[in-house]
Image 1: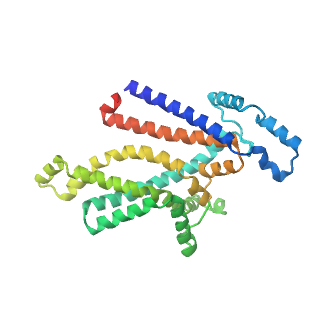
Image 2: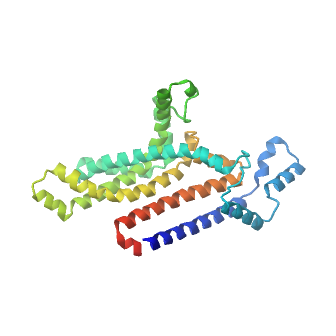
Image 3: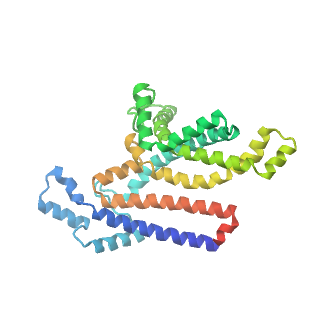
Length: 321
């Protein structure tokens, strides 16, 4: 098991280095530089040259890369050009909002997938099964931003029952703790639905297929032969074994939701990592773009690592692969 963990850890570190290197050169290959975002402030050429020297942009690309890599090895992500704050502080400030959104979205995803997937498997070949399968394909074929815009159109304009943007109301500070919590839930509902429903389509089909496979096993037939009710066979013997692969799927899905929240956060003005990435790109904020990219990669790699560990714990053969 130790050898397996070391191999996975080494591969993860190499992947992080490759992504960091690729992101650095891609960002610097884009036209322009951060000083162009100061055009609206009417800075002259001398001031722009001073900014380039201050940011280290006057050095060669190779030297900039080595200096950035050295700072990264010391655990430093640099200072944001646009906000003049440490990149680590900006990530730490935005991450809780994205984490909350991802947690709510994964609840929507797996809750919907479990309810509809079990219903479809129990009525295999019936009308309900057909309708649920078609609905899952429709959900999976729609891009998240389209689902988000349709939800805003329906529930914020046609039937104005939910807020269309932001994380809190303007007067949230004046509310009681319970009122602030309810206000947060109202603002969270639409983005969580937009992000969770898209992934629910594929997860639903996974739950249905896994449950149908388990219900055809010999021990299920033996349980039925002992006279157990179909409900007990499903919930006690079938569902518990069918949902075991979902643990690994969850370890892969949660980081994906964290990183897939970019467009959703922009549409709903949600103050998380996705929105921070969007404004960092607009302002050509190299340190912030690279810091957010590296952090997102770390989250994905960590999720894959956890999934590998869960798979190795469930199947010893994987440890020697």
